[in-house]
Amino acid sequence: MNKKLGLLLVAALLIGFSQAATAEDCLEINFEMSDTVYTFPGNFFVEGSFEMTNCGENGVRVWLESSSPIESFGQVRGNVMLGAGETYVRNIHFPVPPPVPA
Image 1 (cartoon, rainbow, N blue to C red):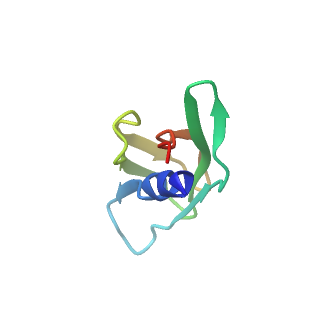
Image 2: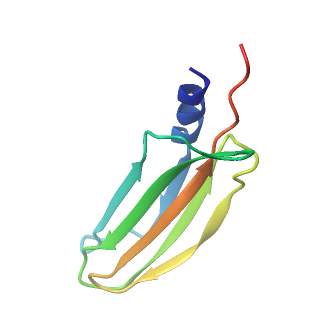
């Protein structure tokens, strides 16, 4: 049950996107997360995948910001420049708190 709670905390990851919007702008975003918690001695994590595609006709600058309720994950902030049709892909390991013994 604690692993499910950990997954819920990781799923609470907030990703903020800010972009100057015009009629020609188009941004497709895909975020996937595994439902399996992987373990190594002392570490628990879930794998995730983030993909962002500029489907517009012009290059764009996108501001990415993420945060998590899990302190060890920290925050990510920064600009991503995407040309027309360009895709930005990142695979991420999200830490999950260890289960609490019953």
